[in-house]
Amino acid sequence: MCFLPLNCLDKKVDELEEELRGKTIVVAKGKELQEDLIKKFELQASKIKNSEQSVIDHEEEKKLLTANLERLEENVDGLQKEFRKKTEEVEEERKLQEKLIQQIDMNGSEMLKYAQQLEEHEKEKKLLLFLNFSSCSSQSDFGYNYGVILIPEGLIDFIPEVQHLLAELSAILAQEVGNLDAPVEE
Image 1: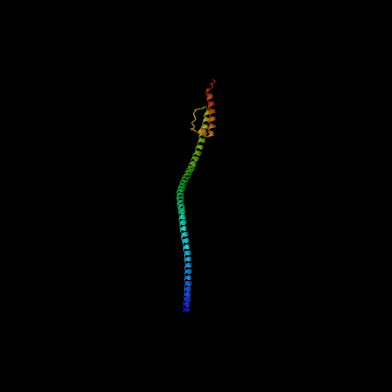
Image 2: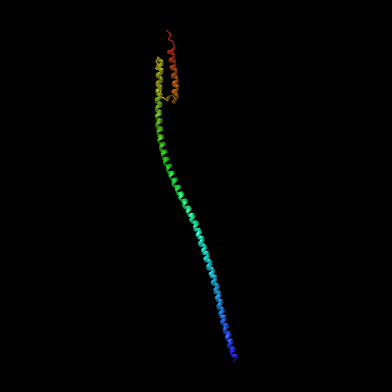
């Protein structure tokens, strides 16, 4: 009987050892599973931390981009105002240029008209001076002296021939006046 309980005990020990090995394997698998879960948890925590940092970084970048966008909008507004101002200036200058061109055209036409009138007046003056000089010379030859020559104001300084003719007329008149002042010999 002794053997029998010993066998029973051995059997019992074997069963317990078998159960212990099974539980050791289960515990080992549990520890392995626990380590895997811890690693996964740490990995997940790291991902969450990285995601949070990414969110923070994105928020900072968003703030910078928003500030840059606001500055760009201000620059665009300023440039649009400057562009409008320059456009108005160009339009005003274009109008002034058109007005100036019209004025130049008008002045050119007027200058041409005045040049033609001046040419006609020159011809008339030369004719009048010739007639006046001829008249004075012939009157001087006949002993007539009226003593007055009508010349339009400003004409003397304007035409050099008039100055020359006046000098000749003055000389003729002086001779005539000298002849009148001289005692008459009887």
